[in-house]
Image (cartoon, rainbow, N blue to C red; front, side):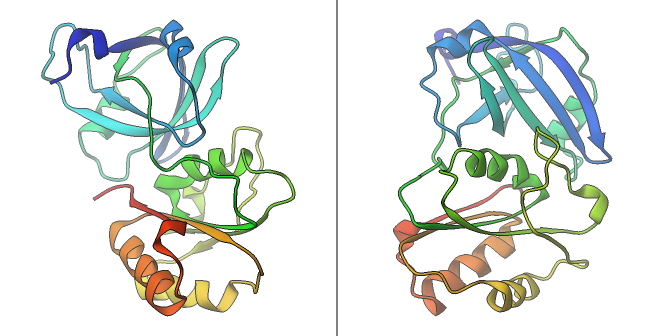
Length: 227
């Protein structure tokens, strides 16, 4: 369990349901001033009032954007799983206090490559948007967002849809792999692949890049985003 000095808090200044399965939260906190932010950070949020229930469960959400002048973080919370986090977000309202651990992360933006593969499902979309916005404009990007339904795809904060997306229903990891193998371009240079989203698909794609395409595993940033 976290000690009290590890716990931060902020005010929920806006919450909107942006489609059937996605809520968009804006959290403002002076604690964010302490953060040395790197795009790709996540926020481990307590599902309730930590001061009353210190043994509360937490859920990890990607930081969609950080605005440092007013210390505001954007988060997209998906409710596909219908789990505790999905139930919790439906109870929230403007001005609620949100408790969380200091933001941190491992799947960070890395601008050192010549080109990028940004691959994931809807649950990883906000994370990939944040990575994409923080790459140099001249970088080449191959994107592949897979979803069950067209209506589950939501735009980035500026209203744009910068990624190519594909509707795959039912979701079969081998189908995702096959489509990527057909669509991916021939790009020279040093690449980095972010492979996020549905667990079985992440495993299949990781093995594809490692074993069939012979990528260096240090260049594969892979993580399942839900179970």
